[in-house]
Length: 575
Image 1 (tube, rainbow, N blue to C red):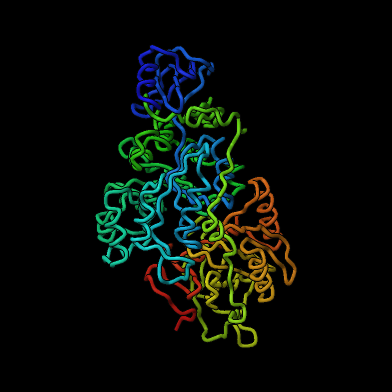
Image 2 (cartoon, rainbow, N blue to C red):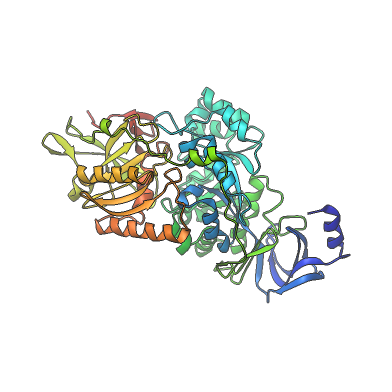
């Protein structure tokens, strides 16, 4: 706001626009809870504590007041809705800022995908800051739809709402000093660089941290978390749909290290956003696990703001952005009023006022994120000739995106290795869908529980090729073709019958329908998969991460099985 007007109101010479009277202010600087008022003018906090005159007052009746919540790392695309619909899910929960890494849509549409996310999130009651995707593609062991090098990233770096460089997944590239990786790290040396180093420790971690990445959201054990904290990294504790790490890690948060910790949701599907929540849910879980409520709120606000150099938010203080949450119970954080930029935008979980739906008028950007499924079907062969007595199998770890690398005997019929639902052993295929190369990687996976049919989707982190797991080849073919017919989406089939679909026409990742409709479609798809025997909480989230070749231990891309620990493509058959 205008500085002269701010000073006049802060001095008490003229009234504020709004006074939140009689609140209990959560001071994230000192850890105190102080009785007082909060004065707002335009989009700015002008006074915190003293009573001001104001054009309008709201008596809080002793309820708590805290800064708007900040998600340290999220892929909006994983909500399967466009940014405006994502905002409708999270803002009523108290989230007013997210730092998103649009590498999902960037792996499909490159720079135009990044521009799409910026345009589609303009003017929302949710501030969407963009960390530029550092790993498009994640590695050369998968075929993505685009490639972003250091020059491409620098060309985007000065656009509005760019925070820095997103999760640097190419750990070997950073540690070994490979040219492409070093160019990106050097280009963003003076900006925030987020890390992504699951399981990295020892001297490799020393080198990685020294190369520039200063945060990590991939910790799965206390020892890993503490090692990274001791080297000066910020650790963002993740609770996603497919990766649930909070209960394991929160006991490691102490009064001495809590200021280096925050929260991240990473990837959450619509049902979890609507039923459990967003960052508010992580606060509740952390408090349930014994964390001090004020410390939890600080982790969801000031800590994240400081890491991302967001000096205009993250606390209730004069001159900061008026992102404010009102709630009643420190031990059961639930937003009752949410103010974004000084405007009441949600009350008791419902939206207040007009919420804009940004229009993507740039034809090049709009066209780049549509019609993204291109497959050379004549080149695709799903058969697996039996070539040995032992084969590598991806072992699913429930509630995690890491996998096991198993060795199992194949089930052989007519000279071919086939799915064996009785052993919970399914064939898995990743079909390249961006360039119609005909690439297909085939392997096997254990842990879905599926007894009949197949599930498939165009969400296959991070290259987002078409991925399908099934009990028989007919079902797998039907599922794969159904995804292509939708031009992106998730499907459940049995034989030649399609049982459920979730159309995702925006890059094969996001729907153009309202959040509630997508949630209904997802619920129907998950229910259909479970009717076929699937035993996981969300089999589609798990399916999508089986193609992510930077998360240990065994994954599958369109180019074959990847031993992530060795960082190389390996054969299906074990000698």
